[in-house]
Image 1 (cartoon, helix red, strand yellow):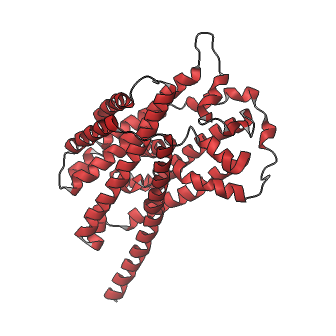
Image 2 (cartoon, helix red, strand yellow):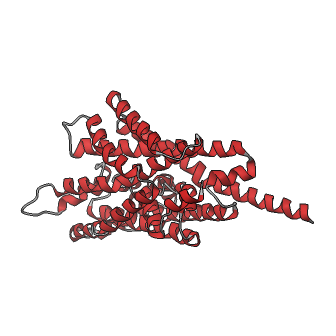
Image 3 (cartoon, helix red, strand yellow):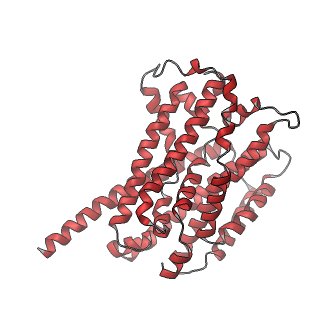
Length: 368
């Protein structure tokens, strides 16, 4: 990665936080309370605290590993330690992860659009409607994508306040007693939290472009904490509004709970909110699409990622015309994504830190 390219794609601390927060909060949010309730009842919110602890720890390990490696992009850092084969292997790995992440989130968004908004519209048309503006943003580079994420997160701070309105009909006794079934259901529900806090693998690719790298640790803590606040707020609101048995019936309780908000001039306000959620969900597939084509461009020794981005968009449009996964298939795709996240975001930084420690120890012994 050249110095000029890094300078042109530098992102600020706020953009770094917004990108990571968007990757986490965009996927799985609408169905999260139901999934937690099925596994741990109304104690499921405690699993989110455990997920935040593990995710933040893994994110800090990634930042620590990046600081311990030489300067440059992550694959370039590894090439200095392992050779050119590691350079290509890492770009392939992260390209596959980013493409899969982008496609999984985009399919989930299209399915939500089909069910809630555009029932009569073919899904390949919806795909085209989403791809065109996504390409317009992603082609501008990481700085433009970062500014877009910063804008969307900034103008969306009012959304959590809306979820305070259903509390007028809340039944807080639904939350008690705490730990009614012990810790086992909570640890069972903990299995789905890596999906909610997914996206931390992007720290590997975003860190070299962060303008002030000394704030990287604070950035991952802030982004994870914002995600935790969002998840806990929406989950607790759903838990105290729906009964413990009723919440398991709704597939997207985060949307259904908004039905309690009524205006004389608007019917089904939850549909309007879902339409706005599509903008928030775009913070999952747009950044990862850019990171994916960035990896493939660097893999083939190019500098302009726009050609690869056009190919990716055309492939998506063509594939959707013939087949698009349903909700059950997309659920399985999300489970695969969790395993990819565990391997890249959780296991890889540990391996890198161990190797960096051994590498420094070997250098000390050689100089002694």
